[in-house]
Length: 140
Length: 130
Image (cartoon, rainbow over all chains, first blue to last red; front, side, top):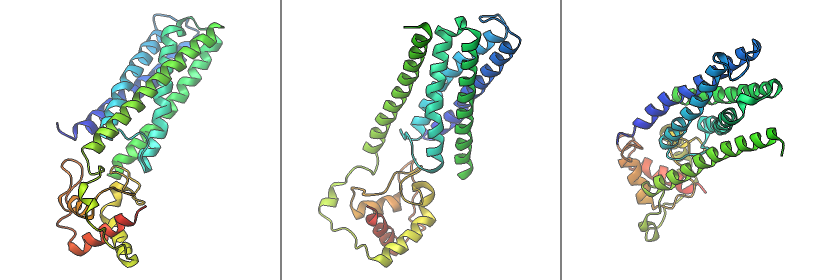
């Protein structure tokens, strides 16, 4: 197998969960602002599916990253920084999607506000991970 | 148990499970990579005396290391893209072979860049890493 396939797959795969999770947060925030009741047919529905697809999309991103680094879980330098943000982001993203699927549609407005804050934290962690991923590419 | 605690616990469990699966997969890949790489002990190390680690030779080896190797193995040789080189369980001849031949798809050959003196210094430096 071409050994350069994993960096290419990783580079392609990581943008889906990042964009979908951030997009999900923005749609849900808009739905929250206009007081749309989840599960509404509009903004919250878009936020729901983007979060679910974002979490699902994070799996190939993580798996391709593990193959690319031959299983490095932390590493050194920029890779270490990347991983320090990736692992909490991945955990939080999966947890948020799980909560959203099983409970989020019935959550009170107050609890949903907490969910939005957690999505913002996940988005910040993923963005920081993306920044350090980009630093590694520049360092090459 | 209140529904909010129950749902949060379930979500935390799912996140933890995802993380544990990823870490376990990483460990499996690490072992697999180590098996097919130069991080495995080589048998000849048992029969060959290691290169002398004279301070001036080690210093020269470190200079060469920083020039040719540090961008992959890290300035402290603790590994980055390439593996950690501290306390490698391989013979000096094995180290020289890896530097001169490289590893297919993993590490380039440095045969054209480093001659015998350089290789001795680089080996001494790698050997000095505890």
